[in-house]
Length: 193
Ligand code: TYD
Image 1: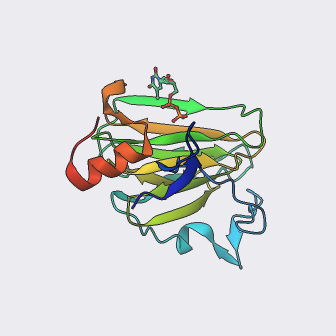
Image 2: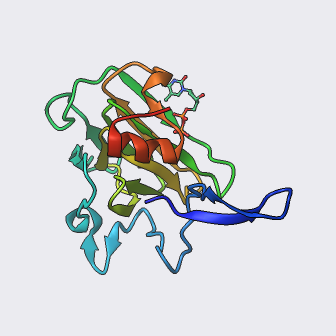
């Protein structure tokens, strides 16, 4: 359901407008960012406790090979094996300059994507139109599936945060739903503007 807010028009009458979907930046108190090195919440590894509540999503685990001499860890994604689709496109986002950067703010009609944080951390906010959920993504071996019809935003990007996305199709803008009300219309009636 779309929340509406009251404003007065030029003649002083109250009119209602849909409230724009403003992604909330979570405060440290609401969602404490976990130091990436620790990867722990209350002594348990984060990937063990993430439970996806929204539709068209899931946890994706990459194979991790730890170098015993400390020369760097390796993370392996294999299309149709641990990545549940054939990969046609890869893109990454790095060097967020502002603490309050917000990425995403859209849903896709058909694309499937897998999102990872290869360095640092960010908060992934998911919304399937019914359920909402925020996940701290801070372990390079644990990604999240972004299926179709899932409104998503990335907030709380840490310094040096690098986001990696694998996608099952080439970029085409016609797959994007960039307006939250259109997203709700799309999932409720299958219609967009
Ligand atoms: P967008 O997907 O909106 O970024 P984000 O969700 O991370 O905030 O993309 C930003 C811009 O880049 C937009 O103008 C579309 C363009 N773009 C491409 O040209 N090709 C691509 O593969 C992607 C992902 C984006």
